[in-house]
Each structure stands twice: as C-alpha cells, then as structure tokens.
Image (cartoon, rainbow, N blue to C red; front, side):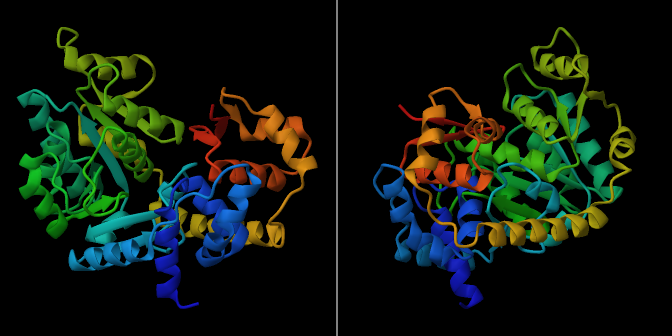
Length: 372
C-alpha cells in the first residue's frame, strides 16, 4: 500500500466514531495497517454487543487533507521520526498532530509556560521576559495561545522558538483577538492542533490540548493561576507524566496567586528566573533520548504486532470474565488482567470490542468502565 494511501486511511480511522488515541494504537498494532483496521471495525463492534461505529466518510477525509494542504500545513503521525518522543511517552498521546510552521522547533528542549487568562500586568511582563530568556538559551517555549500569560509567553518567544498548541482547528482563531499573533506564530514559530480544520474549540477540547502542552515539555511553569484552573490541570498532567512542575510565587492577597502558591506548598519548584528553569531541565538530552525512545517505540510496536498477529478474535469464555469484572466504576486494565487470569492481549481485545460497540469508556491512568 502506498504511503499516501496509508496516511489517508489513518486519518480516516482516527476521525471515526469511538476511536480514541488508545483504540487507534491498538487497532494499528493488531491489524498492521489502517485499511485492515477499518475493515475489521464492524465485526469487532458486533462481538462487543453493539452497532458498528460511524466510519468517517472518505470524502470528508479528502476534504480535510485538501484544506490542510491549502493552509501550508502537514500531518504528523505518532510513528513518524519527527513526532516528539516525550509526547509519545504519554498513555494517550495524539495519534495525529496537524502542524503549521517550523517543525524543527520540537527538536530543541521544550518548556511549557502557562497561567491565568486575567493575569496582572506584572505577571504578563514577567512571562514575556522569562520566555525571551528561555529561547535565548536554546529552549522552545510551549503554551496554549489563551489570553493573559499564554499570550505573553508567545510574545516573548515569537521570533525565535514559540510553539502554540490550540484547542480547535488550525484555521480557527481563538480567542478572536489573538488572530494576528496566531498568524505570526504560523510564520515564525509552530502551531499544533489535534482537531480537524474548521473545529471551533469547545470546553471538552481544552483538557486534550493541555495534555499535549504538558506532554511536549520537560517541565511546566505556572505563572498566576486560580484554584481549579486549566493551568493547574496542565501542571497535574505534567506531574503525572513525570515532568518537572515549577511555579512563580505571588502575594497571598491576590486570588490569582493561590494556585501557584498551592503548587509550591505541594512540592513544585519555586521559580524566580530563567536560570532556575534551565537548572531543572539541564540534565535531559532531548536528542539522545529521542533517538533511543524512537527505537524503543518501534521495537515495542513491532513486538506487539508479532505477538498478536493472527489473534483477532476471542471466544465467550474469554470475553465473559472481563465483562463480569467491569462496572460503572473505573478500574485499571492491569487489575482486569490480574483478576481475570487471562493473557493481556485477550483482555485488551475484549475491551477494544466493547469500546467500538459504544459500551466502554476509557479514563486517565489506563482505567476503563462500562457505560450505563
């Protein structure tokens, strides 16, 4: 199969109903190609006790690819050599990234700078200066193009190495007042999106965007954040991924500083200057680790395909114990393997069937639950 056709099929697979990052990777590993995975979906869903999910229309995919090309953008698949190795380490990395701009900026060490939308003038100035100092030191600055701290971080790093991860499509400007800086980032920096072109960002898209920001970076710096803010979600995701979490302290009298002060109290590193950040990430060699991880990912993927080759079905004696152990309460997949006594590939296939049938939900931390 031609590479261009495989790219088409992969995009069609991830745009299909009930296909998330984990399901996508399992289908590719089990069937070896997106085309064979697409053919297998109806039968897998039937065995899971539900209807076949809606497969993305081929004309829709052709239109999306034409739009991407018209934007001067590209597609980056998780097994491409340019796909950032740190992001691939996540439990649910995006199988496909849409990108526009300078892809080489992800070859440098990356640090995320995030914070309050309604940030103070002093905090915005600090974020701009901090980002500028980081890019001068050879670090790419990653943020989410929101108002306030995110925008300030992009402004400070724009001409050298800024990366903006957006919640909607590459051609959608959000917030609208950031349309000019988004255009400039596409020219001087790098724009990344998981959603198709034309997608208006919704509340559900932002946590997915935040995981990309946290996953790309060696560390995340938070500058002003209210409790339960999106910036703290990004910091939590960074911590869960084993990355550095850093925060800039603020006055206890300012509600915008409570989130950062809480992070520091809970163990985040207190940051006062770019040198503090560089000290925290200096022991990592992105390029060396990327090469090693690329080899590990390829070997793991190839081993998974070989291990599961020819195993595209399980019988009721294997499926039933898995279903019996599931409930509306999330449970770790490893626990299902342990309690069922089944081989891990058999449990994963049972879960795959249930998810494609619309009967299973996946949660953070490799946990799953049955839908009511």
